[in-house]
Amino acid sequence: MIRDQGRKVVDEAAVIEQFLALARGTSSSLIEFLPAYEEAVTLPGTSTLVRTHFLAHDANGTPAVDQLAGAMAAAAMDFCIPRSKLERAFAEYNENRSTAGIVSLNEQARNLFVKSESSGEGGELLLFLLLERVLQRPQLISKMALKTNTEMHVHGSDGIHASLASDGVLDIYWGESKLYKSSSDAFRDCFESIAPYLRADGASHRKQDLLLVRDHLNVPQMELAAYLLEYFDETNPKTLKVRWNGVCLVGFDHDNYPNVVALDQDRKKKVSEAVGRWHKAVGNRIKEFEIVDVNIDLFCIPMPDVADLRARVLTRMGAK
Image (cartoon, rainbow, N blue to C red; front, side, top):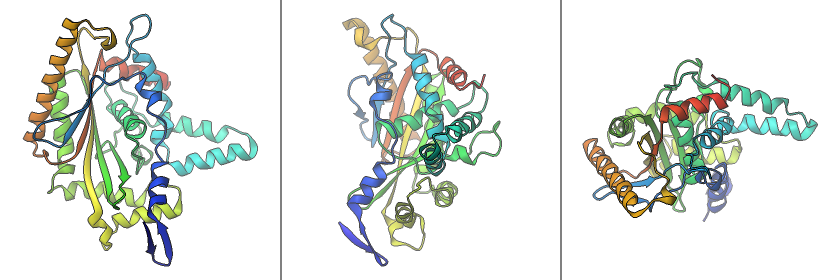
């Protein structure tokens, strides 16, 4: 549909396509290390879609922890650096074939991470990859770029991404990630953290993040940015076309880690029973925190050792 926007004519189909093109990377570059286990499931009585993924195994039967850590570390610049800065660095390279600007941004990105194996930023980085590469929902703001102290975490949600629907609705996705040893602790803390942003009475929680989006929108194309900013202008009727959603990543330790492509029937039954227990735990938390009617995508990722993954990501970044 083509509409007037002031004196300009806006081709909304082209705007949607342009916005989708902001998503970086393809799912195949990540899902090879994190294949899905069975089909995604919408939990009964909720609007939550659960995707369960296990780490792939290499030819020696070893879980691909190091490969996943490498993919995460390689995405640090995409996660941390605003697109406008990246475009300037690549323009500099195209002009004089110097990689100095790109190398400098890569160093900046890696230095932004808290140098602690207990930091939650590894989970935020993996959540970013799942949002951009698997769900194709571009980042609206690079909150890491706003950090003023590299030993402190960014406050608020773990990520804000979006998609544009053909009916003009802007879907905003509030992100939350938890990488814990215990699955029950991870599920509880994840939904306790994200629920205030998703409930109908959560305007006060959303307001600060939305002000940051308005002032630091991570969209370098001026016309596209102007179009999107109308959704954040309280005087504009387009604010009525904003819908809140959640995307969660919950990772936790899982003993006797399975190679899901090589399971016998007995072992497969046990894994499926464990997945069923996780689904039940998620459903209970969704109801407890009163967000059953909100659209939520949950990535449930059992791991051999979440602390080991965090440590390997920091090592790959040269932060240890």
